[in-house]
Image (cartoon, rainbow, N blue to C red; front, side, top):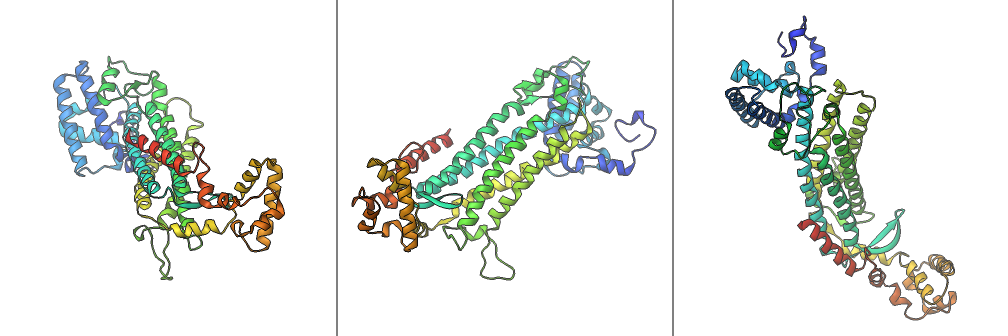
Length: 458
């Protein structure tokens, strides 16, 4: 039989079965990790005396040759060899002869593939942390330029209170900070070593799992072999974190789409991050943030897909688990592409400060400050709230804004009003007086940016 496992079989695998069950089309992405795991495993086999040291060295050299071939894109992976493990083992036997078959002593593809994915996610998680920091840095740099720039703050997509544009941007900094912390924390669970668990019950050979863990940089060894080969929690956790990251990217992208519209014109995205229309020459479409927003759905799908695969699986390994990889790869690639685009798009966008300021002048977002003003004069808040509601209604009916009303008009609603009401209602004052920790005053925003820079400096 042509299969490395074919001794028990009397027929060749049906070609349709071969194509349906093969995973090499996607798990070839694990080639580097598979070779790294094999190098550590064969070193351990040699040092433990499980195979002769000369055989271990020969296998090691063969693996290093294959690694170089993979890096040079000189390897043609074959569907008939099923997966990355069998492809590399077949190549190894072709290179070093039957001694290459000793590499699989004391291990199974079950613990091998789990190890590959731990190694892969450890690398990718570390890289994604850096990409998130690039986005955070872009947000900080824009924020530093716009501490004094005012923008309408919204609730229910209705103008609520004016805020510093820097404050608005920094809200996303802290979302991404939590994402980064989640990724960092997940590394504790990614960094568990499954190798040495065998198919599900361990091995009869006197292996040294601690040595393999040390060689591969794992901090923890799975204490239960059945858990080790069937655990995909670390992938679920990554997919969950990835979905949260994409949620934050999508929310920011939605704001960029809205802000760059003709109706808002708060920002203009750089031409290099927009596209045109095939029929309407005047169009400048925010395709990048739109697509970032759209790609969020696929990360959700990858998470739900794996949850569904796992929900009914008995211990230990089942072929269903082959479905764990494509979603993981897709989420990694989606996050990488999204974060790499988001950072420079933020860096290069133009902020239309005058348009933002005009928007603030033409709304009632300073109304709460009148209520606070009357409360400081001794009026209960609920009574103040009712008075301001009537003032806003009066202003709307007379096509005015709060700063347009005369002093006599204010006193018609309450004799508690004094001439200083106009200073209270100025947008700069409305923002400046919100000086509680975490507030939007320039002083608080400056402190927030300083704290953010300290976080990035660690």
